[in-house]
Amino acid sequence: KAGVTQTPRYLIKTRGQQVTLSCSPISGHRSVSWYQQTPGQGLQFLFEYFSETQRNKGNFPGRFSGRQFSNSRSEMNVSTLELGDSALYLCASRWYPSSYEQYFGPGTRLTVT
Amino acid sequence: GIQVEQSPPDLILQEGANSTLRCNFSDSVNNLQWFHQNPWGQLINLFYIPSGTKQNGRLSATTVATERYSLLYISSSQTTDSGVYFCAVTNLSNDYKLSFGAGTTVTVRA
Image 1 (spheres, rainbow over the protein chains, first blue to last red):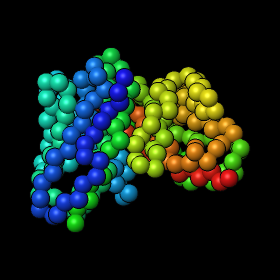
Image 2 (cartoon, chains in turn orange, brown):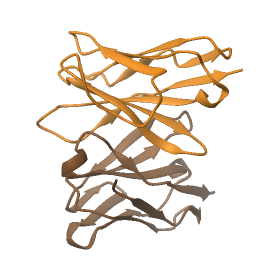
Image 3 (cartoon, rainbow over the protein chains, first blue to last red):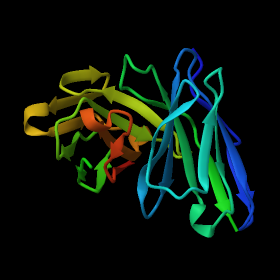
Image 4 (cartoon, each protein chain N blue to C red):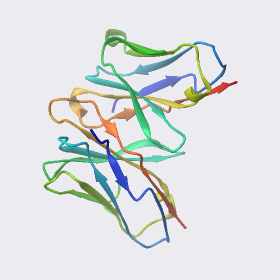
């Protein structure tokens, strides 16, 4: 069974631009979560989607948004990029609600210049 | 929210040595996972272990839920074991969100 996939793997953007990242979960997994990893803050939860609905959101500004499609694929969008948004963005999927175990994709490394 | 503390922050080992990584958490958990982050950033699942003991090859893990800690054992370490090891948990009130420790950076020298 294929794992979680994320595209693109690397991205360089300029301050003020916006960016869209994509995540395809493991087949059959309907819950998708997003995390941000930075050297200073570590791994932090962004949001979770299930059945095309955002179930939960972490403590991030409204510039961070996401959505989920009927095939469970998810996208996250960051508008008006700031230098501090440079990070590794990780997507995870799980077999909600039957299991709490989460599986992560390879990540998208975003650099904002 | 739930607090997760990992120790030690850094560990340097000679190839072939054994080691123990510790994870303490501040509340009851319904999920505890150990991950190994590879050099490219991907989090590789090692164990899903909210309680009990599991083994997978040279790695094993034990979670004592009543005392709020988990241990990851690496035996006969190899250079490929190098990397950052994370412990992450969820609890009933936040079952969607993994709370991560700061990680243990393991360096295995040949």
